[in-house]
Image (cartoon, rainbow, N blue to C red; front, side, top):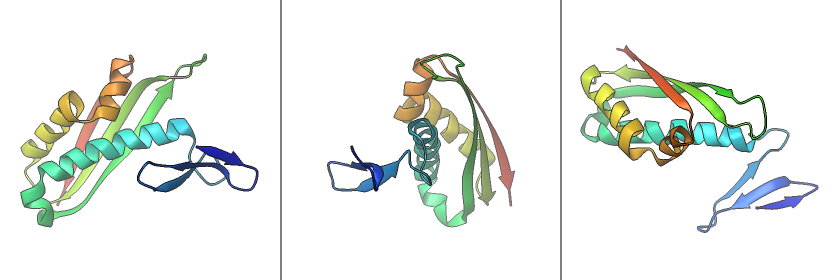
Length: 126
């Protein structure tokens, strides 16, 4: 991570991917964590639906969060609303979301193990 007056905060991963953070038009570190949680979980769902991916029209996660009022301003609760459009079994999608939160999504598990509560809902659309 480096800071320059012109670019602000710019990160470069070990594989050479470059990203900006905490700038005028870029997310804050906590926004990045929250969106990383949503991305991590949505990846688990899509990968779990690998044989049915052609049946998915779209999949999104809407995120709401609450943070502590005092420093450190950690997340205290997160609500995720999954919206899946397509012809996939709701029961399977629910099972994939549960396994993501319980076993696979490292970002989310890190957040909940730090004390944040997590809730989620699923909306299926044809």
